[in-house]
Length: 114
Image 1 (tube, one colour):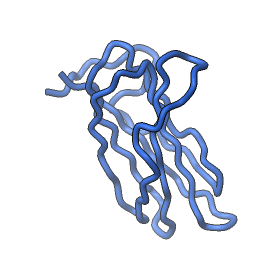
Image 2 (cartoon, helix red, strand yellow):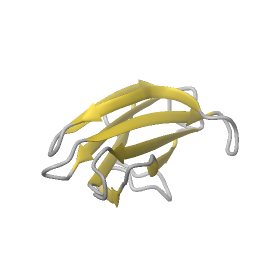
Image 3 (cartoon, one colour):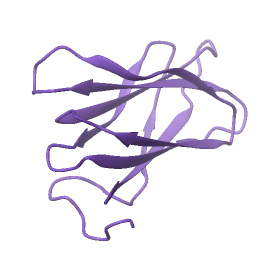
């Protein structure tokens, strides 16, 4: 069951649209301190260029990031959902493109689950 209430200070259930380039850029940070299960949907909003994304986890702010989801390719115009059972305080979503000089738009939506 997906909870409908928003987590204060975070944009749960709404599309955050950011651009990315050839180097990994943070496209989303999710506070998961009070959640065990999280569903994250990543959108490649570009019609022409593929992106790659990865998700890392931090047990505490400023700590060492662990790989939660390794680098994953997402073709133009597509999306992917990651359902995670997490022990981390924060999840960080990164994205990049291999297209030289291009900055595709990436969208992130998340929901907590019971």
